[in-house]
Image 1 (tube, rainbow, N blue to C red):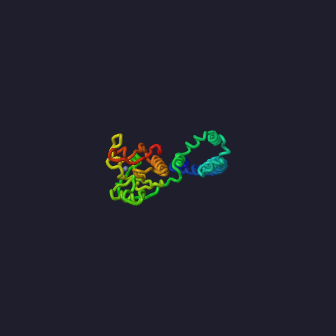
Image 2: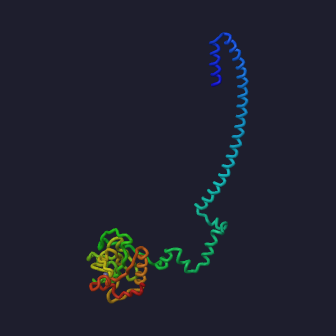
Image 3: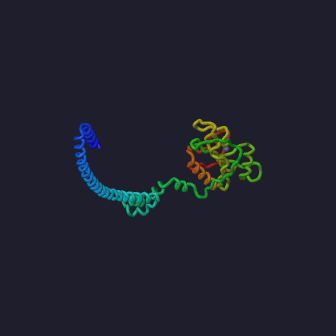
Length: 288
Ligand SMILES: [Zn+2]
């Protein structure tokens, strides 16, 4: 384009000079037109050849790209399959194929002593061993004898054991009657254990039950209700606890120790000496 423009400018100058020159230039231009035509054909041929070469090259390149992408796909598929197996949780199938990964664990399991097999698997198994299946905490909520609180587990570190009985006639160990007496005094424990060893929850542990009254721990803390759980066991001053009750106390304490960071299990007489004497005749050795 640039070249043809230069020629045109030069031709124009010749034309402007003379008519002779003009004719000469026209001839020259005719000759050049032939040359341009030949050059054009040559360009077309070169263009076609280049196009063919590019097409062939691109085709080969495309093939290579396809092959490499196929390899990637193969790898990708492999990974995906592995992932799927892991996600779908079927390690059993991999087990025999990967003895280096799985066998050591099996051998380790086999060579473990019985104690270590029982201990590590889980706390739950330990709990189920210490708490018999017969242990059941029954719900018997009361609407008195406590104040609503939002105690957290770490706020509770003490269990206080009490004993009570019905001294107003009729069955001494009637749960309903004893609870009726407490209602009159606006007091209540968190739990009560009847003579058969049934344990009832009367007040949720997050609430502060009025069971200890004026009280003080040996470490100097007062108002024991604030950080304790109260357990009443049905028994009279002149009577003994039943085996079922000892079992229930043991189970309940174990259960509470799992749920709260219990440091102390004390008697009412320990935190209100001179004022309280319960739990009467309680054999502490039987829960230790
Ligand atoms: Zn008491």
